[in-house]
Length: 621
Image (tube, rainbow, N blue to C red; front, side):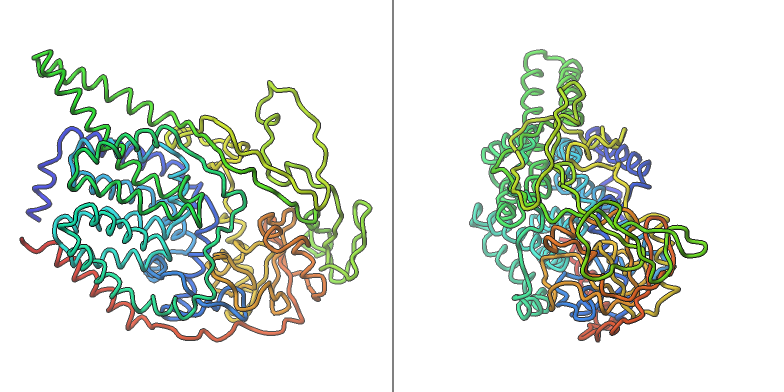
């Protein structure tokens, strides 16, 4: 308590400014609470956390995805344990998903401010906080990559505890990073090693910290090694080879990098953290250019700007010989810098053009009238003729589903249409893309993107039109899907399998109902049996108007709807844009859970981590 009191007494003007920035972004984010979660990755984590509750511990086999075969569960469990704890406290899984997505950016912002302030000074921490708030893509990525965000939150504490010679705490924090993300925690360990190589006098201590953290990670490490053949580190995103360089923050960060080499000593931490993240370029490039690298860049830039501020203040004090006038002139430096950083984000995109080979173009399934009380669902066995001429399917589709073929346009493929974005440009009639034709997507461009502040103040669909991320996109998690989940719960038993054309929707339904799914997300771990085994599904969810483009691209040239054509489906009900069918010929239920680390073992181990960490942090030196 005495330390906490001293900490608050030590706060100065720059601390107040930094905390003001934190509060402004917190309030603006709360104003956009309904937009969360802003992307689909959280649904995978929701499915995992709910399945942890079903298993009564940490399962080593992923029985809720790609059911009934499943796959090895290799995703580190810390985030899912924390989400399970909230669920055990009677918080709904939909609320948990919103909380986790919402809190990530703000927790990283707090840890960045605290880490830089502790290692350097309050002025450095203020500038670092402002820089971290600049690029909206970082705000978006932190909400999307929740487990990686947990690692970024822990990172400043790892280095603070190491510099304060609390080596046990540093080892535990680093091991928690290993238990949070499959790869990013190990890159933080690599950064610590690079830092120690810059300062050979601390190399022995750094090696002891690394040895201790990996010793604590051995149980999960053995599990990963035993199933390493199931792991693929290739990026699932197409076109990720393009580099999006946010020029302003990179320029300030490189200036800070040079400044740190002049200052030496503990300043080497920040360049080391940047170097440690370079390997991300080779297996997940977009997470480097538009994601995790912003933390070290903001730290480097903050220290560099603070050094420049100090240099200007020193020169003004010597020349003006009036302290108040010198401070006023420094304020004239701070204000425009902060405004530019918060409202300007110039981005240069370059790289090899992305080659896009469109899948077999299909119109989404249409649902016709039929079921009493549900005007958009036909009776069992009811057939509909194709709306437009097209080849007939060899077997019948599920009741009420029809198909027709039409040429795919560039808009259908998600390509960038400059004419549609700028009404002042002449409109060009574009030719449809023939099936099998290979296109090139131009990536060399320069533009100003919306910053975090401008996006939070006035979220719009501009980002979506420009192929960028935005808060304006409607999330899958909404009232309609929650009603659909309640319908699934009512019409099925916990061990019965569901199927959906959209893997992220399947994970969401798993998170809300604990029902296993024939599909799954997190493509870095392969399923034990390739493809969806939809014949095992007791309930089938088909969208009324849309089918996931990502799913079609991942599953091949044939639309995923063809997987359901041989099933004997009976209409059950409709919720929003989704129609639910019962598969009367379902062949099975979910597989056995396999090995599960029970809570009676997992919680005491995690509690021991926390207690030792707390003791090492609060004990007197």
